[in-house]
Length: 158
Length: 158
DNA sequence: GAGCTCCTACTCGGATATGTGTTGTCCGAGTCCTCCGGG
DNA sequence: CCCGGAGGACTCGGACAACACATATCCGAGTAGGAGCTC
Image (tube, rainbow over all chains, first blue to last red; front, side, top):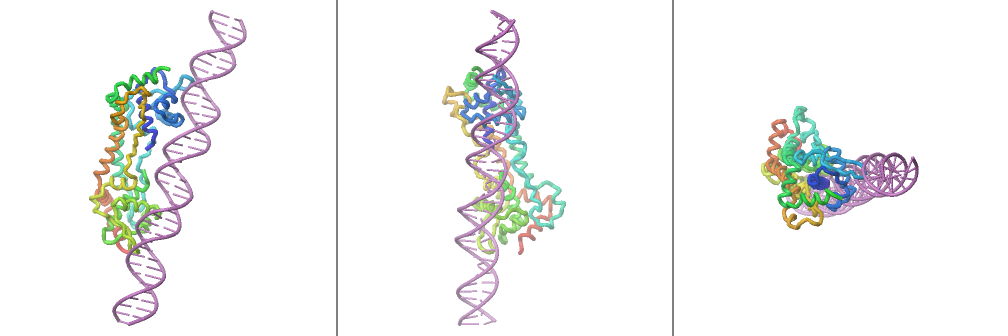
């Protein structure tokens, strides 16, 4: 899985803590997590294209959440970074191991292997879709109650 | 996800159908699925190292299942091909977005982001572990009852 | 002193190199079968 | 005719390239704020 997913999650947490008052530029975010600025910027663009965050151009520009954290599922984030294609891609190995003699009817139904893999992947997606940035934010605050204040200090003002 | 996983699944189905009477060489398997023989061979080696299939060297050698299909979970197969490392690797972005001022105590607990992602991945693993090659085999036979016979024809005899 | 203009600094956006991992290929080690020679 | 041995053919095993995608970076387009000039 892409490294960018983890970065995106943390950045979204930061943006949630920072609030909608003023946008946070990439440089600020990269500095606080000690990440390569240019590459993080690329991930943020992906999030912006997906409509998860909003970008404001210009000198005082930056990024902020496009909607409240409760409305952003982890599935949304993963999809934005990784794309929509399933992890297990069925190549439809045609002959299905039975040579040329196999009846065509056997290929009407979806491949049993694919079905099994998709079932597992669906569970994964379901779990991701059931959790929101707000949930993660709450969990993080439970561990570190000072996180919101520190984040606002870091991003809220110059 | 590696292409090899799909190949491995189909091959294991074939081996299950072929039975333990005589081993099936890579060339035969590659031919029936129209796959690059050398690369498929590499995947089979991975399965053998994982103890899922057994390899017999020599002229009449080949591969056969190391244990009955009921004892081979899809998780086993994925692990054999993909490795044991989790898809989402937490890089422990140290400062966790709150700058240098963050208290050390905040880092004792596991990262909330990581916990959420692991939860989803656990669901995926659980689903994979709950399904066996025998299950997939049964599903495939339900769709194509002639599959076992055809496979035995293809692999069972010269 | 107030207002307008230009200029600079800063930020997003996309196009461009690089590195690592998957994909694909090759040749050597070992085993079984077959053919040939001898008894 | 039966038995033993050598040769060949086939298959697994691991080492060796080629390609694709993730990683990393750079420069151009656009905007806000401020300095300077004019009235």
